[in-house]
Length: 304
Image (cartoon, rainbow, N blue to C red):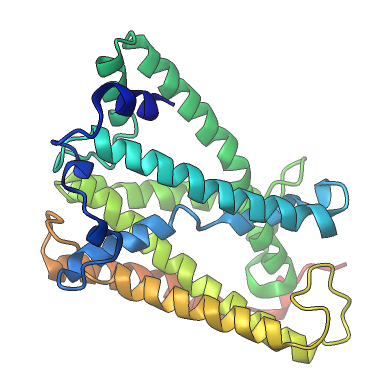
């Protein structure tokens, strides 16, 4: 609403990113591959929608209502992110975008529309509350999946500890420690925008690898466990729609990984450091999981 109000009052700001907009810019500029890396950052907006599935059994008639909820969420995400992206691109001066400062456009809107600056503090508080609410899915979603993996004997017994309310204590603590360590990259990389973007792309690449495994597992289970009654099934009969969806997903995922490995233009870091950061971050994350899996013991499995 603030962005639209800014547009109505000021029109297209010539100093903003939209000031030099042309219809040809709707398509990627393949002569400047550095711009494609931002595609991976955009994909990150939609990564993690499936984490809400841990709450699927808490709603009425999940077989019908959960797919409707997810599809509606994705459609609304696209619409609102397009509107937000365009209005922000119109207000923020070109070359002055602060990726790690989520309140930057609100400050610009309020100054232009004559709204008291205390309103930006209220918005900051609202954002903080929204992030805290998100943690219920972002933290506990993967953790609930991980503790199931632990109880099946793929992680040591220490990972199976739960709180009185069933929250996986050890896994949540490890999440907090790892994220805190990763956040130290803000101290190593001088440009905060570059640090924020590089961490986002690394996270997106890790997501992509998991999504590939999910797509391959879905196909495999259709044949290995064809007898299982599935509440959520692609296609009423046969596996054609599953193959089509999985192949389409894998192609999109591979393109996202390739785009994420392309050093962005004017990133503030050397191309070699950027690529090395992405590759090493991905390798270390995968290697830790493979080493733990290779060292698993029968005694790790939780007794019924």
